[in-house]
Length: 184
Image (spheres, rainbow, N blue to C red):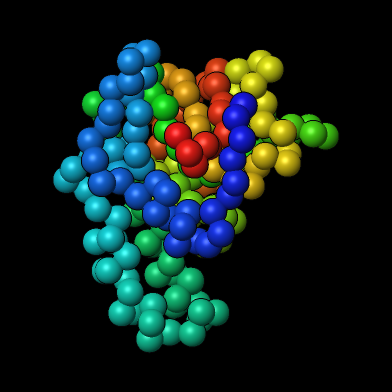
């Protein structure tokens, strides 16, 4: 894995992976994705957030009615559609790690998410912005490398995976991992 340095702010993290282009076909056959490529063109999670924003703003965070609204919003986000055109494609996608299965010094399974700290805060990203990743043998992530962005390469499946932290709309198994190189 190559060298990297983590972004210095949440805004830098978001800018790192904000989608502004079509997927790029790399010379080695991989399809390099940005997070927006995982979302079907006809879907936007902003419409879900916008629908609840005014009601939530009028309530205290701990109000039971606010909790019910957040649960309704999360249910809609958990049913966000995936981009079926990407199913079965060999992809390379950048993101951040939310660990699921780890040993003393490495992480074998994690959620790949578009920004640092996702899934730890409420609500987690929509399912079409969350990838369940199981690393290939020998390609685990060292704990000390888990705080910066990475690249994940593997066959993307539009297969939902439920975890204790969030539901992922995509799955990559036998993933190869590289640290994100800001000079690349």
